[in-house]
Length: 443
Image (tube, rainbow, N blue to C red; front, side, top):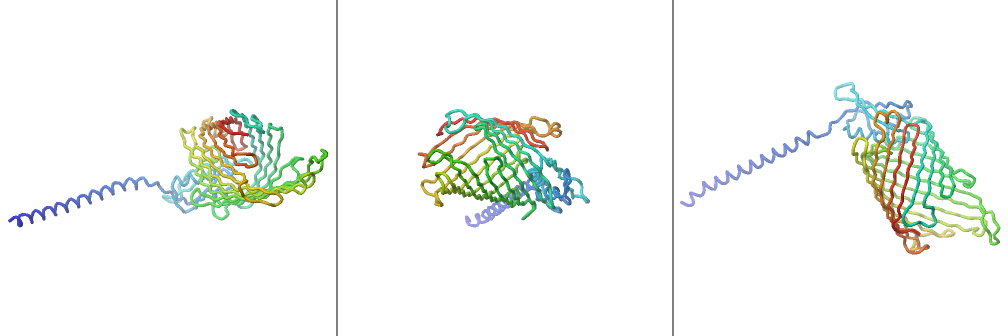
């Protein structure tokens, strides 16, 4: 009897268990559907762009460059964030001051015309920068602790061909530490839209002016290769030649004519991620760069006591820098900037060279917090230009290994930077001040 009484109870328990499993499965399926419904509702809307129009610049070459740099294609769909990132890329072009976008109704329902409005830099623009430097803490030997640096730049640009930009600049710099100055003239050409939309190649030649500069010339080549989204690779090559004549003291103390020859070549590759909304006055987004560079220098002297001497230096550098922006209010933002680098310099005489225990090594790391505020409202900004106040507080740590000068030097500094910066289509003016407090180190 016990056996016949338990069988119906077992079947009942199995039916209850099956019902429980079924209800649990039903609840899990319902929960999954409820979880998926908000996710689907939160999917960003897509906009079908049937046409891209560029306004604000009349030259066809400028319009083609803007379209190429946006990396957008007609008859494709994009989210609003993707469209804004395209406008941010346009704002980072060297001939653009500001850019904005708007969507207009297309020829059919669900299609749009994307209008990119650009405010371009004037064909001839200027730059002026004046920064005062003040040092505190431990005093550094062999250098002036307090000085003012002035830099003035005049730049001209002209669009040529379908996607070309011809540019030239003259820059003069004055440093009151030793009351000397320097002038540099540069001419170059950039071809946009190479390799892929957003790619470019730029060549330039520059020369330092002045009677003490001698015969000198630098030729450089830079290639930009766009990757996915806001990622890009940059490749740079440069070659420099200098031939100068001076005088050195002989054994008798009388001046002897001396010829000085210098030549070098440099190479650099960089990976860049940039989602910032402005190249100079960013308020959101981030920018990260990782660099690897190589440089070889050769110096040769003819005449004087050191006639026939040749020195070869080779430097290898690895570095990384990242900056992240957050918008606090429509007119204020903060940023955190971090960077680190390592370089090693090998040297030798009369053609000899090699990295060894006597090679110089330099390591540096820094962290800075920056606050920026727009001093003008939108109405005045649209009419006159940008006017901002930027203040940064940071600390840096460096280590220098130079066997010829004794043990390693460790230097720790705290920096306070503040500047008022004005920018419009005619140029850029920066008035700044930097205070450097040396906590430790220094020779």
